[in-house]
Image (cartoon, rainbow, N blue to C red; front, side):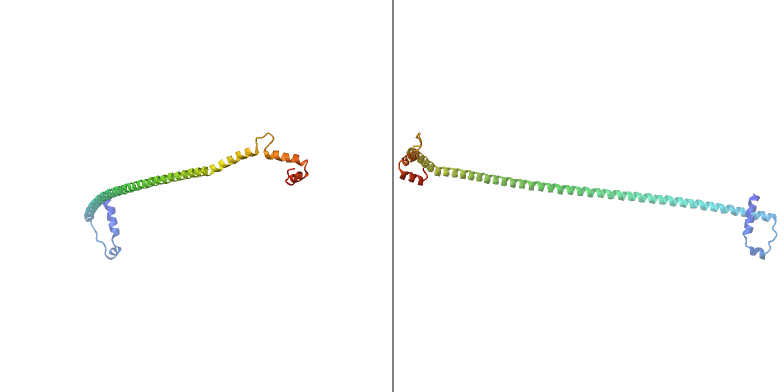
Length: 213
């Protein structure tokens, strides 16, 4: 124990100001006084160590308490933040659901309105189609009636002409005697005139003038 106190004593004497040694001469100290002083120094050192240990314990306790309080505050803040986030998410879900319901209702209303509009358009188109079909049928009927009238009128107009032509044809056939073996009457008359022209020069001249000889 004395060996442990001796270095401490030396450090204390060395730490004293140099001026004190220069001004005053240290009185002679007995061994008993040195021992007492060393004992008192040891007691002070122990008290100082105890105080430092108590201060360190108190500081550790305060630091631990501060850490615990900080953890509690952080945990409370996190819990509050989670609660606020959850409340915000719930509010957002409610708002999104309400918006989706509103959007679905608007889309349904729009689809119903569009379907009604399409039905009206289809009805109008059907009415127009029926009207167009009726007009087209009427036009076709008028065109057919016109063609029938034209055909009847043409037949009515042509029938007398055809009958007259047939009458003329029969008359010519009878008068010209087209069914004779030696040809028609005109052909036989020209042949007779040619035979006569062989004997009569005047007849021959007349036939030549009309390119019949």
